[in-house]
Length: 350
Image (cartoon, rainbow, N blue to C red; front, side, top):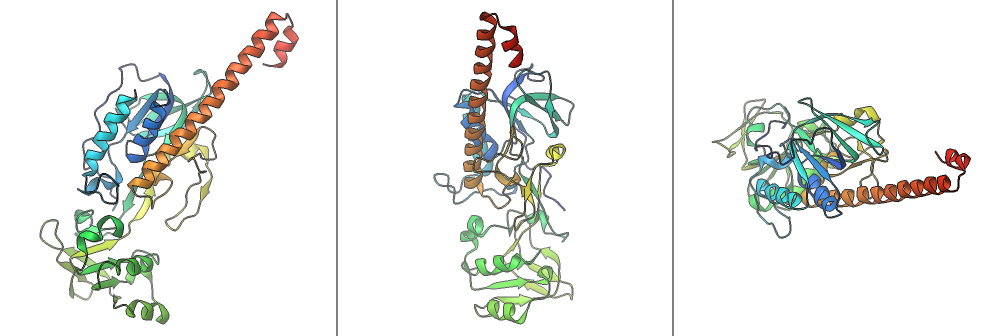
């Protein structure tokens, strides 16, 4: 199962009725922390920006965010509300929608990109910031997805303090869960590692976990139970009930980058799968496409995503600045050649 179902209302459109077919400086695909940060960076650079928001941020299942300096404990929806208002204050337009395909456009002014939306609309921009995030594909275990972001958790730095000292289970979905189990030992000495999804553990690995009191349970988890959002424990394949107060697991990340498929962008391996390869500013292998946030960095938290969006916005603006000068210089040279009465020189520059 994936966490694609929206749990918040998509942002209200704030675009003029003529948005379709207009040429923007930048299309920001994604209205989460990364996309909004990119839009603010571009808006403050006096760029015309269109944000296309599908309304399904990755952290929409949680009611509080942590380790976001100055916003400790804030509701993720409130952070996005503030971010939208800031982007709007710098002239950005926002529309609700999902991009299904991105392509290079011809005959639309300067070299341009065109985005096709699920509802049939098309929008144009000189550059694109891909910030559409990802979905977490969770194990098909009854009771798990219903508690995602509440008592079934993924990030110790986001949620560990709130469940410190309690009975914590770590549900393995891959060998990477061994790191998860070791990390969570920092928050409690009552850890049960449900190891079936990590494969058979070596004697050395089992001894390492046991050395700090981590209990290893190799039998498969078949159900998660509790009252409402709360968690009372898990049921194992052999029928046993293991009490836990919180369960940490890692879903398989599924980046929302399908709309970029036509470009065959470079990708790079990561502990969480292959992701878009980007430089320090978030630029991909295509000169007009940047990527920021979880779509390019599945492990990035809100702060890292905001930083990545800001850098992508600045990088995209600098590319546009360079292009503006290149175009102006080319025009000046052409005009100079025409005034000199040297059509041959003009032709050689076109």
